Length: 206
Image (cartoon, rainbow, N blue to C red; front, side, top):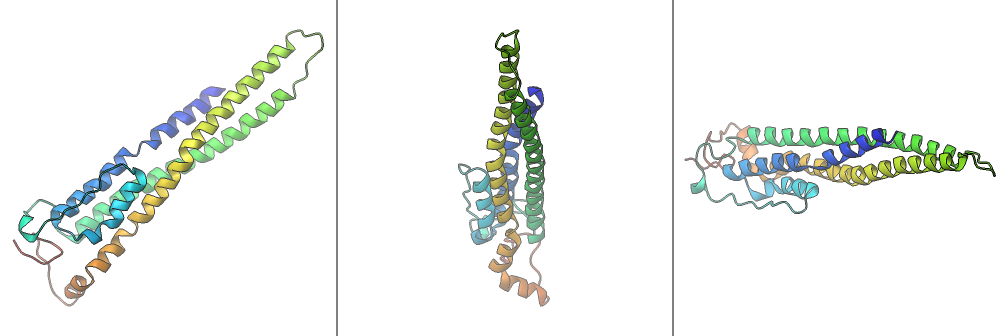
């Protein structure tokens, strides 16, 4: 019976590796850096990376308008926000997987605990005919199953917390961008146009 619980633990350990999510967010950071986006516009992206992996690098240096070259980063704020939304979607999907697995682990834990209770309640005879060994084996098996479930929960619970924190920060990105470039967007809304290339949000041309 422990094969199922072992599978749950193995799946939890796979989900715990958030390297792909970290890479997706750092790729967005790199594109924003190449485009010359203001550092204040990417603070939530950096915080999302740190939520998933406190040791990950989040350095950011957009340079000056002279540093930007066509193809070196996002050509528009729309491209930037689309990429950030894709990273948010990936984190959201991972959280849903984790939550589904948490539900399965809880159900498995309940079943293992019921089996353990039944094992402890197994009757034994004074003149043992093997009943003591059967009971001990049943108890050991149930304890092993509950231990696997507990190990899976110890992986999933903090992982879910990190994913929620990262998602909260990723959802903040559009607001950050809007606040940093409020005047630029007012310019665009009044009929002004930003360059296709160059420091895309700063309005500097190549």
